[in-house]
Length: 116
Length: 111
Image 1 (cartoon, each protein chain N blue to C red):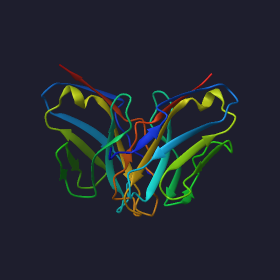
Image 2 (tube, rainbow over the protein chains, first blue to last red):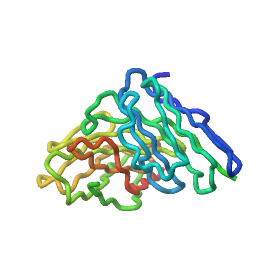
Image 3 (cartoon, rainbow over the protein chains, first blue to last red):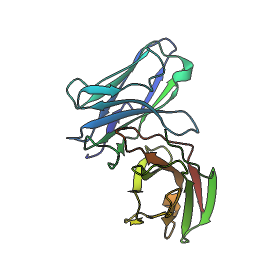
């Protein structure tokens, strides 16, 4: 399909386990964003890539969270030693251009992470 | 980050127009007003955006106050599929790349 694809759709992890969440942005999109959405809340920004460069990681809640986009396309969000408070939906979004204020973002359906 | 204020929830009837308000009194001259909506179990979906002039597209219309301190998203004829959380977001014009979501307005459509 032509949209942003995220996998897995659902992930259940035991506390302390490491997880990796994948995002396939729309082909050719320069900008890629990760958001975290807790139940009943709006999405919260985690990090932003422009091609392979991570330009903003101010929203990552701790050093257990790590994101990469090594070839400027697919991105992976990794969470080490998961905790119950990490349970949330993780959303990926991409946009075409460098200048974002006038650009629209395309979101994937998210990965729902449940930490037991 | 520039802040917006929206009602927590609104309710309307099917096939009637819906006006979703948003206040953004701290907006600056280069900030774009964006609207996204999120249907249940889906990621947010772009609806519309504007800077100064009113905007129309196939999904909705955006009416922006003359002083730009408020705006209204207008769904001309609501359907049950329009039931969603609607987010009004300011996209700052100084190189910031991220969308900052608030709580949004949960719109319920009655059949």
